[in-house]
Length: 228
Image: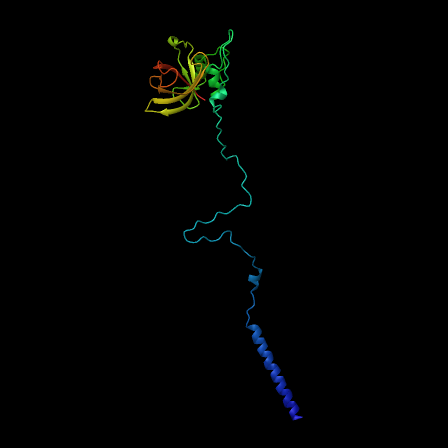
């Protein structure tokens, strides 16, 4: 009987020691904090750049819509057709009719200036006088403006003449080199493109450097420029 009691005591002691060892093993592994388990997963928007690298720009999910502040694209045709020949539909004189296009219709087409239409017989100087009353003239040339010559009876231009100003290059304080085009320089409505002239703003005179009027076109008086 004593042997049986001793055996049971040894067995119970072994079970007690085994239980203590198992508890110690389980407590060695730390439990995950509840706050970390509940924390939502986060991802960086972009990788952190290394030394000397430029941060990557964030890419929007959708392109930003256009707003009224977006500048419009430049309109290259704002001064009429870029090709002068688009404004030149030659029609020879017939019977009592005159050839076309005369200098005014050509310049109106090139510049898109459609104001001061005073009738079929409206001439360069009457057009200029009308635009002057509207405050639309100047002594300073601009690309896209209309150069109006004053009357020149000696050269058969009692009502003046018009040129379209293709380009303006200042040369000094009051001198400009102009690139011009015009029609009817020969009274046959021929077209002349890329004519160079020197304009003196102080004297309001024009010297033709190239073109059909080169030999005699010196000191031509100007009325001024009709602005676009």
